[in-house]
Every structure is written in structure tokens, then in C-alpha cells.
Length: 256
View 1: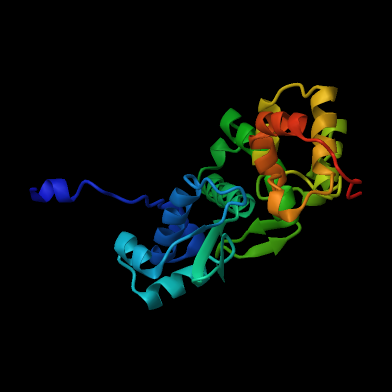
View 2 (view 1 turned 90 degrees about the vertical axis):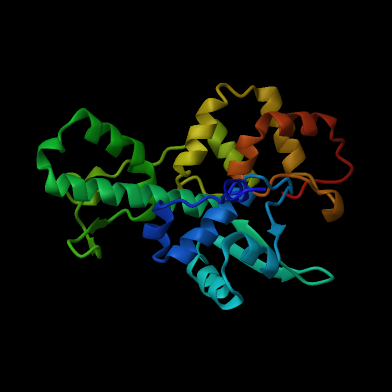
């Protein structure tokens, strides 16, 4: 085997994570965690990896891994469980999506400050429209100051007080019924990813929705409960959940 063949195996590294996390090791760890998250077949999204495996994949020592893991804490969940005890990880997809879109928004805003002639362009208006839901959810009354700090009250795009230009989140009747399954308030905006996936589903039939509602509000023993743990995952796998709900036979009263 020659040297080039030894370099065949590479790992993912997303440069945008450096801006998000603040360190290269943290970005490397989160990049690799996203890689394994997308290949995880476990229902609840948790997967395990040993220190030796992390070191083999990333080259980080134990102390470097622990420091990087602390930096990734808002987006990478960690717990120790099982016999023998193992380190389990799970990417918080909703938080990571929102943070990345907010990061992109801030970069775009900085570009508008240096190139104001683009502020009224079609691209600018389309970008602002696409991100409005995420921005009003994450930081509804903030702007980015010259030093990157947040300052209250004024929209970054228009200079108008944010309270005057916020779009009120108004869920559809179907979205309200899906909110009930996860006890989410109707006033809590969906993430941009949830909205995007919901739109790709097209029209959800009343029959399919009732099947899912019956299945997701039933009392099921924990050891045989394979229902999706969050709304985004349910939407991503909605057709499969409808099939599972169709095969489900309620054996006890509903949870609520």
C-alpha cells in the first residue's frame, strides 16, 4: 500500500462550525458528530463512541476532546450510560439549524453594512423573507453591533424597530393538531426546517392525521414505544409513522 492509498479515509470538517463554536477542535468534533448523526439508525438519535475511537478519527487527546465537547455543549448532547458505561452523543438538530441560520443572517447583514447598494436587491429581500421565522424566534429584538455584540430594539435589515416588522406566527389547523402531540404551544414558532419539511408533505389527509393522533396519544409501554421524540423527526418520517399507526391497536386509554 502506497502513501496516497493511506490517505483514502478522510473525515468531514465544516468550516462554518469554527465561527459557530469558536475553536477548530470544537468545529472538528461537531463536524464528526453530525457525520455520525446522519448515519445513526437508533430511534432516539443517541449513539455511542469511545475516547479511543474519537482519538483515532480526530487525533484529539482526552483533554482536548473534553474541552471541545464543552464548547459544543449547546448543540451536542452527551451522557454516560449502560453496562459497561459508555459515552453517548446526540446532535440537537433544531438548535444547530437555528444557530447556523442566525450565523448566516449575521454574515449577510455585515455584507449589507459594507455594500449598502444591495440592501434593496431581490436577493436581499428573498433572504430576509426566508430567515424571518428563525430570526424572530431566536433573537426577535436584536441587531449585530460593529463588535458582534447584540443590541436591542432595531432590525438589522431595515433599521425599523423589530416589534413593528415581526411576522406573527399563525399555525394552520393541522399544525395546531401536530403541536398537541408534543404539547407545544401554538404561539411557539416552528423552526425553518420544520416548516420546510411540513410543506414537502403536501396535503395531509384527515384519515392519516387521525391515525397518527390516535397512535401518538396512546399509552404505550416504554420498552415497546418507538414513536418519534420530536416534531421534526415525525415530519421527516411521516409516511412511515402513518403506516405504523395503521398497524397499531390501542390497548389502553390515551395519555391526554
